[in-house]
Image 1 (spheres, rainbow, N blue to C red):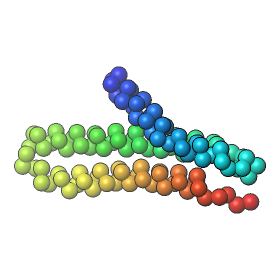
Image 2 (cartoon, rainbow, N blue to C red):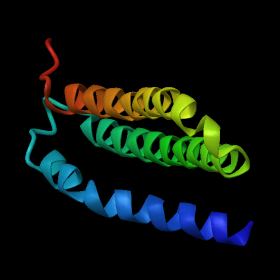
Image 3 (tube, rainbow, N blue to C red):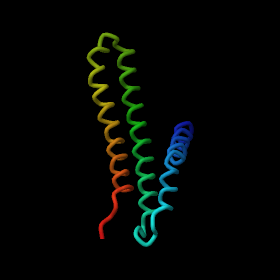
Image 4 (tube, rainbow, N blue to C red):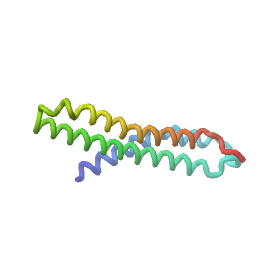
Length: 112
């Protein structure tokens, strides 16, 4: 259990470190025009962290189950490969959708 918490903490801080340029970009925008832009940046970073960690945990669980099934019944490996790849692609697409929404929130100028 402690290894999972350590791994999740490490992943969280790596993602936060990777998203730090977005926080720097928030300083360049006029405060009068974007009053709450800093909160948007923090929300996008938090959402991406949650999506990446959740997607990674879901993918690792799916691959673990598939490998266990293949180890128990090697003849079923061909039947499990395509559904596994489709499932992994769908899980990854949720993380990509979160990233796209974060980019839209960060770089589309509000009207008004």
